Image (cartoon, rainbow, N blue to C red; front, side, top):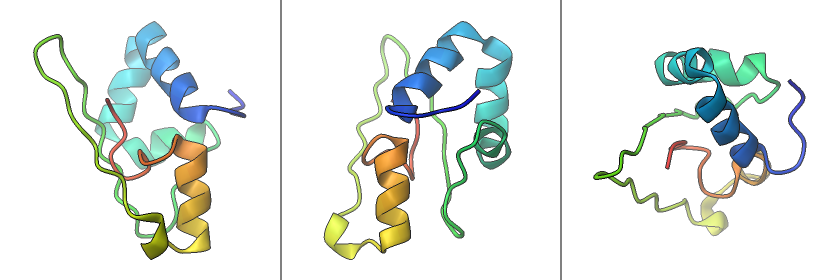
Length: 88
């Protein structure tokens, strides 16, 4: 699958549609993202957390002033502030 604009929303839609993909993403985020053409920068840890009806994960994105150009680009691709904590 080729991801273009709005990669984050495409990932979420794919997770809702494909339970196997969602499970793979939760088990091995780096390999699963790489398989769909999204490779996090070296040293970036990706955590995938699934919200429920009664649990919500609030993500505070990194301050752009403290990010390298590579990390800023990944942040833009991943949906702005979700590069380090993908999932809800």
